[in-house]
Amino acid sequence: MNGFPAITLLTATPIVGALVLAFGGDRGERRARATALGFALLALIEALVIAWGFDGKTTAIQFPERHAWIPTLGVEYRVGIDALGILPLLLSALLVPFAIAVGTTPPERPHAYHALVLLLQAGLFGAFTALNFFHWFVFWELSLVPAYFLVKLWGGSERRAAATRFFVQTFAGSVAMLLAMQAVFVATGTFDLPRLAELGRSGALARALETRLHWPGVAPASLATLVFAGVLLGLAVKVPLMPFHTWLPDAYSSAPTGVTMLLTGALSKMGVYGFLRILVPLFPAQIRASLGLLLGLVVLTIVASALAACAQKDLKRMLAYSSVNHLGLCLLGIFAAMQPVAAGPTWALERATALDGVLLQMFNHGIVAAALFGFVAAIERRSGGLVGTHDFGGLRTVAPVFAGLMGISVFASLGLPGLNGFIGEFLVFKGSFALAGAATSVATLGLLFTAMFLLTMLQRVFAGPLDERWKTFPDLTRAELAAFVPVVGLMFALGIVPGLLLRLVDPGIVEFVKRLGP
Image 1 (tube, helix red, strand yellow):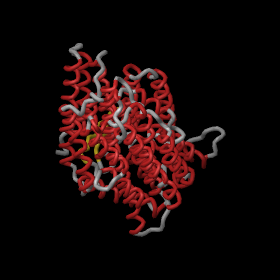
Image 2: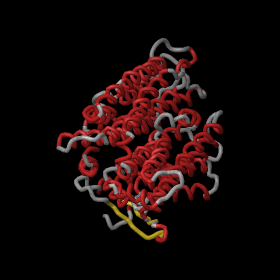
Image 3: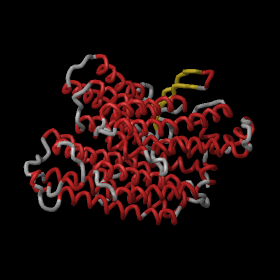
Image 4: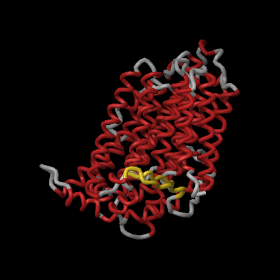
């Protein structure tokens, strides 16, 4: 199986679908949606085949492909999958057909809309499998372009300003990261990420930056820190880490809800993945030197975003801040794992626990957040565009199945035991308490505030007396049930048997922790 170009085929599938939609002529809304869904389901099958063939017991790169691309610049087409990439890859494959099935297809240029959605999926696949920075960066930026046009062309009334802010801020971060990694290439002569990880862990990367780069006005000892800051900025904007989050609420609330499902469910995970794939292996010493500041920003991200969500009266903006809150937990686990500790199996176990939790939180948050935005899309369709928390009330009376399934998703987001949101949060906090107890203790306030705004949302929309306007509010249709029920079922399955995911990542994370050093 490893000799077959499975990853290339997977990445090419949505690109082919996008080309078919772009050049196949305007065939109407239904046919455009059916075509996009067909290619997305094909990609899902291919991703499941890769996951079935993935051996969680080995830490080696699996399904590798390596070809010369631009040899003089150290650029290779090098792809593969390991414990860091397998869950984000599966998540991207799951969410795109879900978003197409649940989201509303715009009547204007539906073929172009779905072509951009598939192009976005190709960018996700490429970014989660690339092992050469240049190759990785191409797909990192490839995902940005369709996301920008999807917001700008089919978003709400504030779409132009939201799309521009999204593009400018994320692109600025990308430029900073690109310049920083060009400095790394000048110092080392390679863009190969596994090779750069070895140099970073040994300290050779920092020494190479000090000896081979000469920037006027910058002390040699400060070069590694400056390069680290550039990479950090590019990744922090994408996650986002506060205070680099200001693009997110507007983009999420202005985008078509199907696109918002992808932005929160998959695109934001590229930033967290970048921390694990690039920042931690290449710059461990710089992270540890800045750990107090980084943990402070993470705590701010978790607590302040939850408080901001409490103040929102728009369902989309409330869930947007909720996503910032949940992704902050991922960064908490990452930075806690970088805390210097004494050598020994106990501390290694706590680090592995925190990082296992990060990967599960990435996957489970993607599923739950996409489902919640999917339910908001259904509310929006039924209400003529209303998404205010005070616009509704008592909907469980007329739509009990709708209320029940969305309620399960809310409780999964809260981390209720037995649902998939619990295990990732539990592992992150278990490992982080042992490694960074003070920061983690403050961060737990985010759990309290999260419960406040999510339960308030549930109460205002579904409980209380039924507003007269919504006496004919329809329950979920059969088509909607066919989309939502498997996803809600997955929340239960992964909450009850989290080993389905842990077996894929734990051995690789244990090896990853060994390479972090004390």
